[in-house]
Image (tube, rainbow, N blue to C red):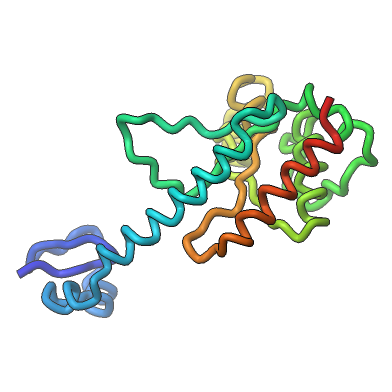
Amino acid sequence: MGRLALGVVVESGETGAMSGTLRDFIELPYDQLEELNLEAKAERMAQRRREIAGRYNQAFASLPHLQIPHDRSDCQHAWHLYMLRLNEQTLPGLSNLPSPDLSNLPSPERRGAGGEVRARFIEELKQRHIGVSVHFIPLHLHPYYRQTYGYRPEDFPVAYREYQREISLPIYSKMSDQDVQDVIDAVLEIVETNGC
């Protein structure tokens, strides 16, 4: 009989990499796991994220100001993030805005020309009540690697450039159609107002 341990089905008697105490606390017998129907729920959530990503892609694909995520037909994208890239050179209106407050960023390496355009774009979205994130800080920008190996942003120029122009739009299965449209409208308005 299989068991669920932190989202992984394991055979009985297998210890895995978890402590016995934690394992005992979170395990479910396989028959109880089937009753929860987690697989169907996960598929519904994934399908909704695919729908949202499709709407974003349709809205943004033709805009030279934005680069949508690559979606290969031979793979199934999880769409746990929607990472949109800004083409800063086509958004001169954002360059002319007052610099946003970047003091909450943990290091100067997270700033830069592209990072400032992104920060302004994020601020514009925030003013429209759209929360976004920035994901996947390149390893060489993390304090450990900077301090231990002396890495500078320009040591990995492609990673640094792409990082500076990326934002992650909201994408989660409980977003309503109106929520999705609000994000699309906000992005399009910012691009229209600030693009060339």
